[in-house]
Amino acid sequence: MKFGKKGLLVVASLSLFALSACGKSAKETVVSSTESILNAKQMESSGSISIKLDSNAKDMKPEDKAAIDMLKNISITVDSKTDKDAKKDEITIGANIKTDAMKMDISIPMLMDEGKKALYVKANNVKSLLQLAGIPGDSFSTLEGKVIKMDMKDLGEVDTKESTEIQEKVQKSLLDAIKALPEDNFTKEKDVYTVKLTGKDLKAVIEKVFDEMSTMKNFTGTKQEIADFKKELEGANLGKSSVSLIYTMDGKIIKKQDAAIHFEAKNPKDEKETFKFDMNIHSDIKSIDKPIKFTFDTSEKNIVPMDELQKMIGEFMNQIMMNGEMDGGKVTPVQPVPTEPAA
View 1 (spheres, helix red, strand yellow):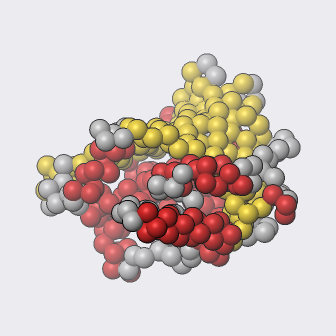
View 2 (view 1 turned 180 degrees about the horizontal axis):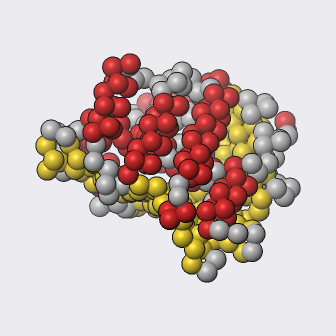
View 3 (view 1 turned 30 degrees about the vertical axis):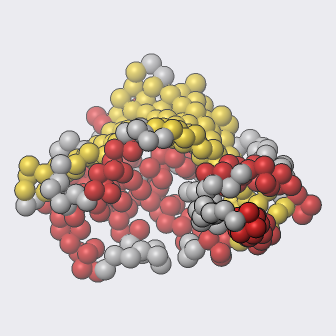
């Protein structure tokens, strides 16, 4: 179901607005609140994300169905600190995963320093990932309290400047769409303000978002695929799809921001086939334009370079192999160790 897969990419990108952007009259309050978040130089927030996918497409692959089933049993938390002046972002992503085969809790704190073109990960959390890979965490006790440093250029072909520019354009497209909505789309109940995008307004935003994404260097779609997507979007029935932004205010201060994204489409060739995507995002706004205190110690004495970590892992694996040969026993292969942090 081609539209569903491409639609997921675009609608999921709408979360950029709610996560990092995340909004008088109800409309004025929503617009001014949204602008205050977009224009904030410093911001700290904590929140949670839930995602649900559902499709009855006949051509669904087993791995796609497995991914959909897993999302039903995963909860995600995101704590973030942003300082645009310092060009730093500290993000802690937590995930609780439950399946019939396993139960796992993961917490990955990361610090991105655009000025130094570096990504830092706390070594204690790297030890946890190594344990998942089959390597005992106590084998790396020297990493306690340290941070692993990785160069951005070694993490793939991601242009951070371009990504930031695209994100800003996506956010502006959504803000422009909100400003163009009539007052009827905005509601107020006590201190809670809501705006809802549906129908042609939502289509216009999706197309704008897709246009911005398609200009990125690492976008893999062809011109024909872009044209096909727009044609399918034009004829798509998005009657039940919507994006809602909900702000809880304390006077003029934003205390909470919620986003509810619902995307639903039918296969034009077989309307019995449907695709549904739901994302609910909750954010508690802790501070806006107040000094940010980062928790990473990135002084030279506290840094472990990535190549040094790889060397330690290699030596450990070699030691296992040697001990196995000396004992005359069988050696259980150690699973490959991830060299990049989980995203």
